[in-house]
Amino acid sequence: MKLTDEIKKLAGQIEAYRMARGWSYTKLVGELPETGSAKTFRDLLAGETAGYNEENQLSNLRAAARRIANGDLSRTVDPVCPNLLAVREVRRLAFSLMQVPAEENARVGLVLGSYSTGKSTAARELAREPGRRALIVEVRETMGDRPGAFLDALLDVLGKRPNGRPSAEARMAEAVAALSSKRRCLLIDEAHHCGPRILNTIKALVNDTPGEFVLLAIPSLWNNLRKDSFIEARQIEARMAEVVELEIKFPEIAAQLSHLRPDLFPDASSAAQVAAFIEGDARETCVMAFTRDFARALDSTERADVAKTAQAVAKRKGQELRHARA
Image (tube, rainbow, N blue to C red; front, side, top):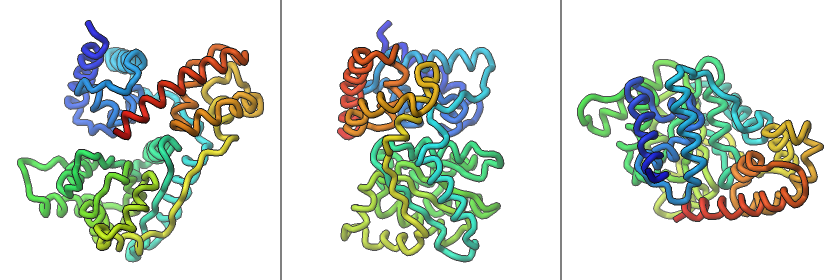
């Protein structure tokens, strides 16, 4: 059996489990981090493996399938250091917005960062905290700036799956009712895929509900808001309490290496030399994803092994990034 066929088969088994449980994709990747992001899992489910390391993805899906078979759904340790800038800043921003009175509209925060600066991971960390106050909804490019598609994803996260095919207005009313039943923090991931119509929908939700809204995006979203076609959607800026710009610093790469491989790096200071060596390659691809894959693949701290591993990971991550941007 080809790797792609086995990946698709395993993903199908996990998908059947997800549907039987009535889980959203956000819930699935939260309970089974081995499945990757919601987008990654949907790609694998469709057999779209171009740009992915098939052996790694197959290994991850096998691990997820074993945990399902064994009934072991206790969460694994998150592969990202909890003290990273993105985790700290998204938590700080969300908690700051929670202090804004519900009758005020300045309950929107924007987090900007290039690919793999930890935005999605930070959102997952916040959503996992006790109380389940924060929820994640992912904006997908395939939504095509259709408010109805965004509202479907939001209602799925809220556990309010509509029967039949209700109108966009009916779905909007259902979303407003669910978000108004108690104050929530809505984390809108991949928000750079929002067109003006989805942004207007988010603006309306801010106006009609009491909770907080944190948009996580690459900087292109801010650039889009300067375009004439976004002139109406630009009103969401008036509701923004703060814009946070993320940039991974050198010490965080060292901290991440130590967090992932304490066997090689007992503390961040011991990882500093290797972090300095890989920093250039990491910044040219996806910083945190590169650091994660490099740490997993590294066998020793010998200079030759460090250089060989960095070269191999840089080549693979560069291919994945080109595929993601295609």
